[in-house]
Structures are given as structure tokens and as C-alpha cells.
Image 1 (tube, rainbow, N blue to C red):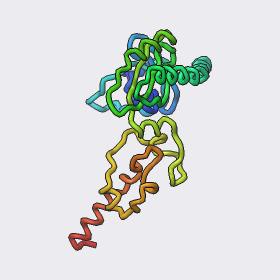
Image 2: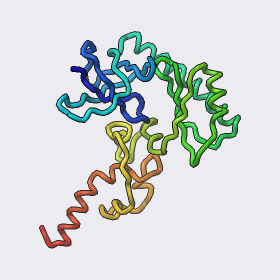
Image 3: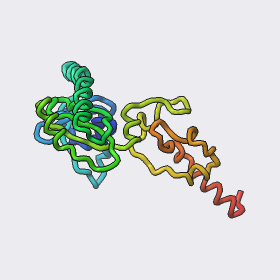
Image 4: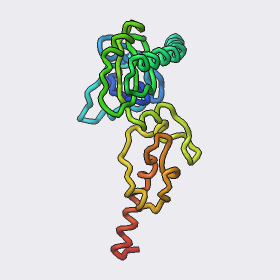
Length: 225
């Protein structure tokens, strides 16, 4: 019976579910090559396998082709080597066209059949001319993906004021809404320098103990120990 794996392709994108054929030996945590769309190849990491007993199976985006070989690793390294030049070209084109957007990152697909351009913008941007010109330069498909400021921090990484690697760059798979009410519930200082992360938004870790603080407050109001 085919297994279903959750695969992370890029940190800024949500993990996808892929079929794992019986003849493909791959384990959680391993790097692999997956086929999505019409023969389009991507490199990804197996996060976990779904329970075989689950009755509700999510739609799959593709299938795992193989574990990453030495040749595949070299191909990924070559893509990384090409990336700075791609970033430079994209940045120059954005400036040339005076587009109101901030370039965050540029990523090649494993097979270099497409380039994903991550950007941030306050509103809608008409980037059709940019896509046409970039497609002509790179001779591949161009995908524009708008992301948020917290996604930017996840992609670039760094350390928080706690001295640890950013939660969003390590184990967080999704972002929760963080509010000032959570800050006040925990009697944290209202100094924004102490409660905001590298992204400029309220730190994700503020939500970790919020439920415990709310429960303690409710018990105190009810006169319970």
C-alpha cells in the first residue's frame, strides 16, 4: 500500500503531501526528489508519514521519485551557486520597472524549469511585464509569490532576543495570530523592542503560554487555588 508523506520543499511554502510508491525506500527526515505537475521535479525533505489507518487522505501534489543521490546534491549546489545572479537580475528589473514591491528571495526549482520569486508588497502589483522579461532572460517559467513579513524572517533565519534560532525558522509550521491582549495577560513589558521579533511583529512565542495564563486568571477570579 502506498504511503503518503508530508514534504517540505521551501520554508516559505506550506508542506505538500506526496505519494510514496512501494518501491521507493525513504525515511522521515531524508532529502528526496519529488515529481509534481507534469514531470516537474523539486527537491524536498520528508517531514513525516501519515498514519496508514487514517480514513481521510489529503489530496496529493505529486509523488516521491527517489532519495537524493550524489548527483542530486550537486544539482542543488549548482542551483544555489546560480541564485545570487538570479537575485541580482530580479532586483535590477524590479527597480527598472519601478514596481512598488520588496524582493525577498529567489529560488530555482530542482530541475530549473521554473523560478519562484518571493516578494512583499502593501497592495496589488501588476507584475506581468516583469514576468515576461524575466522569463525571456532565464528561459523558464516565472512564479511570483507574495509573502508576509513573518515569512521573510522564516526564510532568512536569525536569532531572537532569547539567543535561540527563530522558532519560525526551525519548528513552527504555521503562524498564529498574536495580540496585545496576550501580552497584557502575561503582564509582559509593553516595550515593543522586547516583544517584537526580527519581522517587526509580536513574537510568536507569546502565544505558547497564553492559555495557561488565561486559565490561571480564570481560576483566580473563581476563587479556586
